Image 1 (cartoon, rainbow, N blue to C red):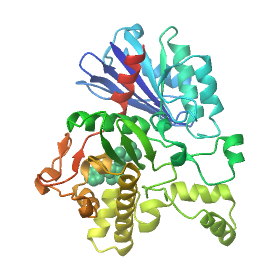
Image 2: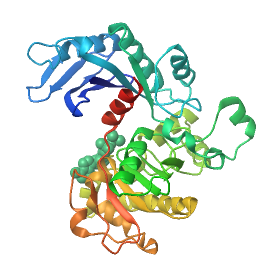
Image 3: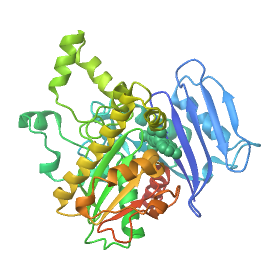
Image 4: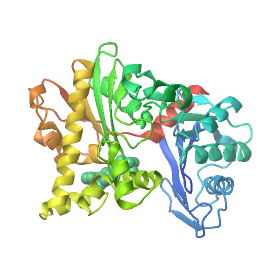
Length: 396
Ligand code: ADP
């Protein structure tokens, strides 16, 4: 069975075709600059040359057609007929309070994605366009929506309520939702399996540290808290996002700089985080290089990032009244031994120790805690596309 995984952004479309017999990626690729001059398809079939094609893509509909053509291409293709695709799994950002699991798309599901446009203004419209483009190009082939928010729907009220007038929750559904749910679900489940934890008696903290970052607290496989909120802006210090701050800062900057709220939020989303503090880059590798070269602001950025992660871990140990395993994942979490070590150095009070040798390993599932560590620490690579494909397969 072959599953096509699609992740649509406002002007992009990423895809992977996965053979579910062996979970191998048959082809993956990216359409860029959809709706903008200079659109381009990059198609990477496994074991074959890369196809790069500059071709007008006025909308996602055309992009989906180009992707399907590339997948069936005589030279670069990996299937001979579109009907070999059993289903399409779509990454969808926001399901609001409506879904706690993935779901086969029908008109009701599309209405929910539409109803959540306000909550995910950059992503949900693009996600819906992607779904509709696949419906048009592949009639009869089921589409499955896999939501970034779904895994976090098990959070209790005390974790998701903001302490603002209740009427705003009632009228506008303003509350914490959390994101990266597909990754947190996948990685927490793998932690329980890999660490041989008791699925019905386990407390896991997942640190998804990439360009965007979030942490979740998972009890018996269910999320009880996570660091992102109504939008992905809350929580950790990220590549370009501020994470937590006093909301009065928004008013203060607006007044001082003569900006409106939207402009300030844009700054908090795109010009803040480790980029904002360091002034160097949003990429951890660049900022750490600058830090090693003695750049003071880069040093503060990295230190502040690590400190915030450590504070969240402490908060979630308290929320769960304990922790069995702490798992690192995503770009920084999987690759950066220095950051992992720095975070763990705050966790002596939990009896956490790190095995320096194992901490250097990369690209594989590994326990990095020392033999004497009271809490297990793991690195588990995330694979959101595979997780989406698995959920899609399970549903059809
Ligand atoms: P996202 O999916 O949120 O865009 P990723 O999970 O790909 O982000 O993570 C990107 C981040 O991971 C970047 O800041 C990058 O510097 C960092 N990263 C990637 N590879 C490495 C590496 N080998 N060592 C340290 N950091 C890395």
